[in-house]
Length: 88
Image 1: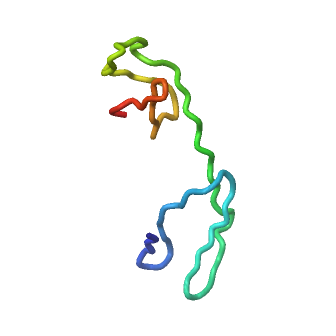
Image 2 (image 1 turned 90 degrees about the vertical axis):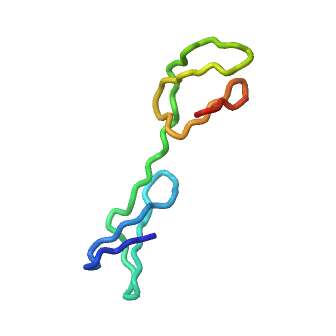
Image 3 (image 1 turned 120 degrees about the vertical axis):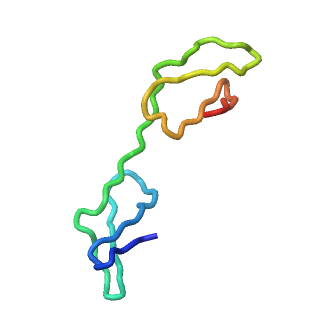
């Protein structure tokens, strides 16, 4: 929800999801509506990159702990031949 400070001079909130690019931001009160100058720019979520996995081998029974290194891995899921890894 939007929180307005006691003096009515600032407010805070969380932006909704959007597509990359500029978005018009409108503030509406009982007195009318105004747009924020310059709006808000959504940036594209960066694709993950994987630079390695350790160890590189494991039992066919599964259960081998692993570490993948790379960038932009926040929120990742991992599959091995289409089967989801656990404890991610």
